[in-house]
Length: 167
Image (cartoon, rainbow, N blue to C red):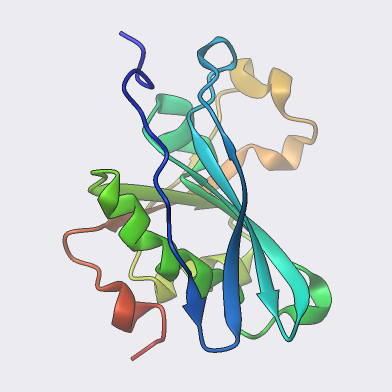
């Protein structure tokens, strides 16, 4: 059965946290031939400028939960240090709940301390650091991309109103 069957994108509504606005820019339907789940793409804006982006993938697959994660984000270098990634992820937790998700996975490189702090600030728990089997590395451009920290967020336990703000 196709996991995207019956899937419908939702209107996330306005997403703001102080000076940060998370703006929906596009929706990508599932592409089962390429192993892609439906996803939302957002631009992060602050002070009237684009400061980063976040991709939120809906659903589950082995690849997503082990290596790719439900959230993929970047904050442009000159805008780092404002907790924009953590705040944006926190703003998206209600959308994940609206899609019936109970668990989210975020992955990052073990040496990406900023991303690890983002995960921990959200209340995510480090489950393990994994190494992708060498047989799966055909799509990996750099050998250093094999290791991943796997963080789990249990949406039944995390309160986005307090965790994303560090309260």
